[in-house]
Image (cartoon, rainbow, N blue to C red; front, side, top):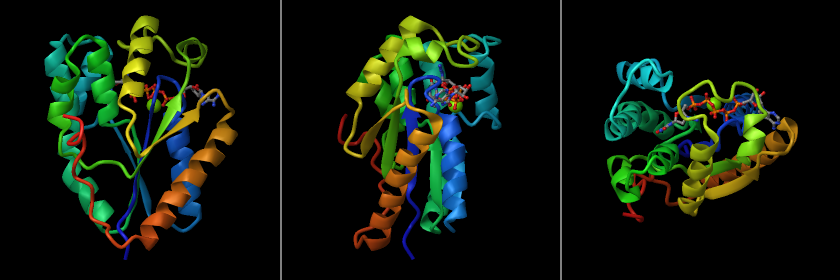
Length: 213
Ligand code: Z5A
Ligand code: MG
C-alpha cells in the first residue's frame, strides 16, 4: 500500500486556505480516499493555547519565543502525522513551516535562524501556495482582528513566502472564485496522489529546510 501524501495549503492572509482545505478534504473523501485535515497553529494543545493568547493580543512574547512556540506546535504533532501518512492516510494541512519562517522573518528575524527549529520536519509532497494581493485580502471577512493582520507586515510576509518557493510548490491565483480554485487544487492533489500510487521510492521526506540551510 502506498503511503499517504502530505498536501499543504500555504499562502497570504485571507487567501482562502481554510475554505479550500475543507473543500479538498470533502472532495477526496467522496472519491474514496482516506484523508484528514491538520491545521497550524493547532490551538487546542497547551502550546497552541499560548500561541492563541499571543495572536489575540492577550499575551506579549518575545519574537524569538513565539517563533519557537509555533515550531514546537508542529513538532508535537509530527509523530501522529507520520503515523497517519505511513498508514496510507493523506493529510491536507492548513499552514505549516513556511508560514512560520515568513511571518517571523517579516518581523525582522534572520531567515536562517527562523528555518533552524523546523529543520527535519516532514516535508510536504505538494505545497499549494495561494497568492493574494494584500489590498484584496483586506476586503475579505475578518481581516484586522488578529495581531499580524496589518498591510505593511502582510506585504513583507508575501515577499518572504516567494523567496521560500521550493520545488514542490504550485502557485494558485487566489483572486479566482472559490469554485475555480477548488477545481485547480483538486486536480493538483489527485495528480500527486496518483504519482504516489505509482512511485517505487516512497519513503517519507523528513528533510524540511535541510537543503536551504
Ligand atoms: N503564523 C505564524 O506566525 N507562524 C506559524 O508558524 C504559523 C502561523 C503556522 C494565524 O493563522 C496566524 O498565525 C497567521 C499566521 C501566523 N497570521 N496572520 N495574519 P491562521 O491560519 O489561524 O489564520 P486564519 O485566521 O485562519 O486566517 P487565514 O488563514 O489568513 O485565512 P484563510 O484560511 O486563508 O482564508 P479563509 O478563512 O478560507 O477565508 C477568509 C475569508 O475570505 C472568508 O470570508 C471567505 O469566505 C473569503 N474567501 C475565501 N476564498 C475566497 C475567494 N476565492 N473569493 C472571495 N472570497 C473568498
Ligand atoms: Mg485559515
